[in-house]
Amino acid sequence: DVKVTQSSRYLVKRTGEKVFLECVQDMDHENMFWYRQDPGLGLRLIYFSYDVKMKEKGDIPEGYSVSREKKERFSLILESASTNQTSMYLCASSPGGGRQSVAQHFGDGTRLSIL
Amino acid sequence: DAKTTQPPSMDCAEGRAANLPCNHSTISGNEYVYWYRQIHSQGPQYIIHGLKNNETNEMASLIITEDRKSSTLILPHATLRDTAVYYCIVLNTGNQFYFGTGTSLTVIP
Image 1 (spheres, helix red, strand yellow):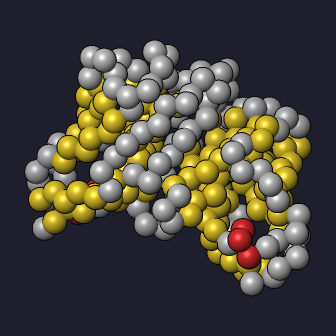
Image 2 (cartoon, each protein chain N blue to C red):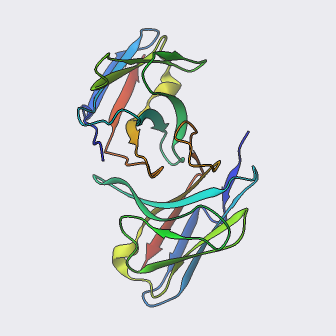
């Protein structure tokens, strides 16, 4: 089974801090994704990556950056955390090749609170 | 990008079939329909997906209408552990998922 592991289930940080959320997958997937999930808004795509050192903006990239130095690891960075970034953050991965017939597999999420 | 419309909530009696509808009237010919579910405090779990034909796996069946403008997820014998939020998603050509707000299914004993 695919395993997508997010480093923390719960995280509390202060406004202005630089925050790192880590995600690791063990299935050699090319694609990795970061979403945030908020009540009433569903999941929204922040950034995604099709390969090492590649990144693409999703729908809501403002205030975030990402890093993909190794194939198995995709990091989400909040450059200067703000209270409106309090959310559930979900990482996902999928095989590459541009195929639409393959599912994304999700981690269990990191619930981030910015005080 | 195709958007999906789902009822916000549904109830189902334990042991009965749960039929969850989804409208995706603007879907393009090469866009897949995916279903995921999310149990509280966990990440979304993949259930099933399809393009044109009906699909079945160990978890569920997916019925897609001939015009592909709507689909139904069927859980044949719902259990209490099937209580979750179910998301119907259309995967666009850029391989991006667009999750809506889903259907909250409650299985009643």
